[in-house]
Image (cartoon, rainbow, N blue to C red; front, side, top):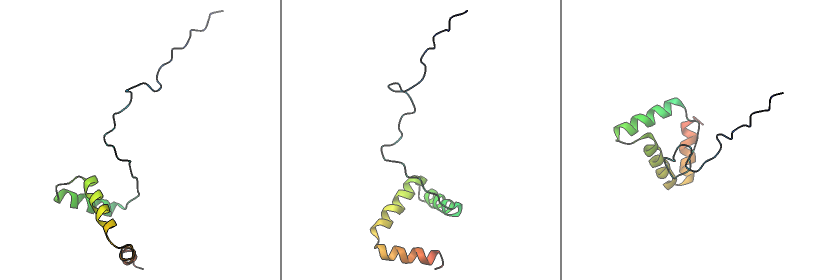
Length: 80
């Protein structure tokens, strides 16, 4: 009977392995309607920004507004 050939350990975490990080901030994922994405991309293009830069700008500006006003705007946009 033949002896089993010992398996070599391949793979697994190694120092420096994997794709290097492209940024230091955490990633935020959200479902957004295609129409809104298209509008965001067009605005970003006209403003000389990336989509991510434009989205960060909109979020930062939105957070500067009074919360009650944002709720009212959101309800109007949804037709309520």
